[in-house]
Image 1: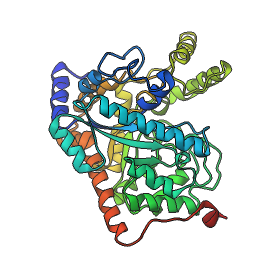
Image 2: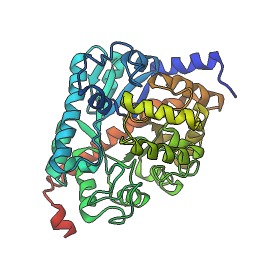
Image 3: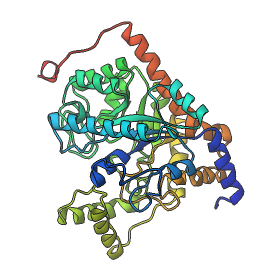
Image 4: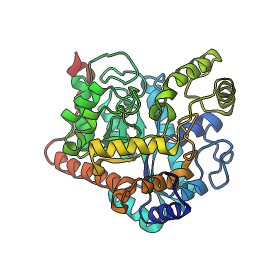
Length: 398
């Protein structure tokens, strides 16, 4: 059933009261790749639709009230180079906050998220994407937390020494002893453990270890799209006991089965042109578009994403699902969810499926705020029981 104009208006009204907390937006990396953080060339106060999925007007149109800005660095950066690049990404977010103080507000706690909502500003949080960002150092992990990072995705697309990625060959079989210590230290700090990108074995090990709710900042249901980046049902079913949150992503190759093989061919085409498959610079996008013209891609829609949310609600429960679009981190987006302005279309689609207003407010806002608040509570208790860990990979993993 197609949403009516009345349902779209209803969706927008709902989002004015309980806006979207989006779990993952790669704008900082896009700014790094496209203009090396020259914000005059990508002024978010102006229309950036030619270059980006994100600008201030479209965030407003989309009803986005809180954004986890990804301070991602590619996993082919190693050691101190990865740490330095992560710091540069954090600095990019700081520059954005300083440049647009009327629209963006720094947030590091659930209370600060609510304060931003009350002010009509977008609560701006940060998530580090990949454990390579800490260079096997728990002190570096704590430093990122001090700088405002509130989740860390344990891996990106490649294994690290202490955790297996979903898109690499099995290494340590999930989490190593040091990997479990990373999880415990994240719990003690109050940093959410993000399980997007990790192998299912790593997901299960993290759930076995974590004292706090975990999140999937941008992952969908494996039962509907059999991609290793997605969440198996047995893991979704464990979220109520953990208190965690699975934030559905919109990336077509993770929500539409027909897109999986097409994407593999498109990635090979990028490599053949000497480009990284994740490159979204204008030059790379031209290569993407040429390939898509010659080989029409399967197109995901708003309904495709809604199918995942229906399934995730059934498997995990309404209290344990959210939204994580992955905008500016993907070359293609679903029809109707073309950029950050598209969230009202998704909410309207869910209204056609009988989702209630209380359920939708949990999906958009309340679940994410609850999870961060719970992580803060676990951290306060843990800090009363133990001090910082100075364990090393060599000590724990040999």
